[in-house]
Length: 509
Image 1 (cartoon, one colour):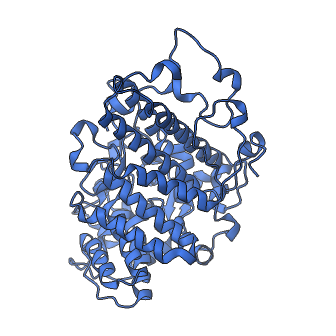
Image 2 (tube, one colour):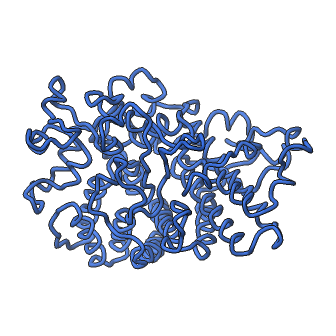
Image 3 (cartoon, one colour):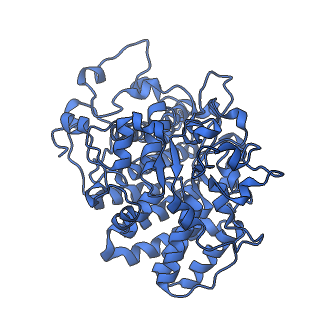
C-alpha cells in the first residue's frame, strides 16, 4: 500500500492500546483535539483509522520488536538455526534460543503488546466505521474498510493463538476500567473467533487484480482465503477428532486461491527476499516497506544487517547448522542443471563448489573461501540480506512476504493428502519443485507424500518463520529438537502469558 495512505500518524489511537488504560483518560474531553466522538466523520478519517490497524503488522514500526524480538522468536526457534557469537550478549535472545525463558522475557511481552494494539485499533475501526452514516461514507467504502478490519483482527489473534496457549478475546474497545480484566478463552473459542472474522471479510474483499495501483499491498480476497486455509490447517493439528472436516474445508479455501489465476510462482526465488522484487505475482499478502522518506516516514529496517553474516559485513546474529545442509542436500544433484535443489543455494551461503567459482562469484561478487577464510564451516543465510553489498549497514526496505503462493500450494497438498486425494497433492508438490529446477516425483502412499511435504517445506520456507509451527502441528517438535540437540521440552511449545498481563489482569491466570 502507498505510504501516503498507510503510514498516517496513529498517535491518537494509542488510547487503550493495551490492558493498562485508565478510566480518567477515557473520560477526558478536549474541545481542540481529536476524540473518538469527533474523529470518525468521513471516508478519509476512516482510512486513517484503518491505517492504524495495519500499523501493527509484525510490529514493523518498532525496532525492538521487529528486528530483534521477532527475529529471535521466528528464527531462533527453528531447529536448523544457531545464534552468532554476538547473540550471547543478549540474555533475552538466548532465553528464546535455549527455551529457558519465563513470563518476564522481553520478546514475549512485545509480541503480546503489539498484537493487542493491533486488535484494539481494528476494534476501533469496526465499532466506529460501522455506525458512520451515508452522508459520511459511501456503503461500498464502508463495507470494504470493515472487511479489512475483520481480516486484521483475525491476523493479530492468529499470531497470538499460535504463540500463546492462553489468549484473551478482546472483541470491543474498553469503555471503562472494569472492562479490562478478562479471563482467557478456550482455544476452540479463539479459533472460532478468528475464522468468523475471516469469513466475514472474504466475500467483501476484492481480488488482487481489482485493487488499483494506489492500493497495492492492501488485503485482498485471496489473502482472506489463504489465511482461512492456514488457520484451519493449524486447528486440525490441535483437534485430531475433527481433523478430517478441517482438512477438507482448508483444501476448499486454498483451492480458491490457486484457481483464481491471480497468483503464480515467480522464477526469481531469491528476489522474493533480497529487495529486488516486491509485490510479485507470488505474493498473496506482503509486509510493505519503502526507501522513500519524502514525507518523513521511516519504513525500512536493519533486519538485513541482523541476518547477514559478520564476515559479509552484517551483525552475524544467526547462522545455519550442518543438519540444515544435510537436509537440503538430501536428494542429491538431480536438478535440471545437475546441481542440488536451487533453493539450497538461494537460502544459504556455504562451502560448496557453487560458491567458489572465481569466474562467477554469486554473493556480493565474492567466493566463499575468500570471505570465510577463518570460518570454513560457516553456513550463512542469503534470505533477507539485500541484493547489493552497499545496502548492508544502512536501513533497507525489503518487503516481507507473509503469505505466498508456494505456501498455499504446499498447504493445499497437505490438506488433500490428509483428505485422501494423493494425486492432487503430488501435482502441487511438483509444481513448487519445478520452480527450483527439481524433477517431478511419482509419489504414492499417504506417509511418503507427507514425508516429502516435510522436506519441501524445509527447502521452501527456511528462515521464514514457519518451521517451529509446522513441527508443532505435526506432533514432531520434541523429536526434531532432540535430533538438533536443542534444550527443549514439550511445555515450551507455547509462550506463557506475559508477566505484565498477569499482574494487571487478575483474571488472566
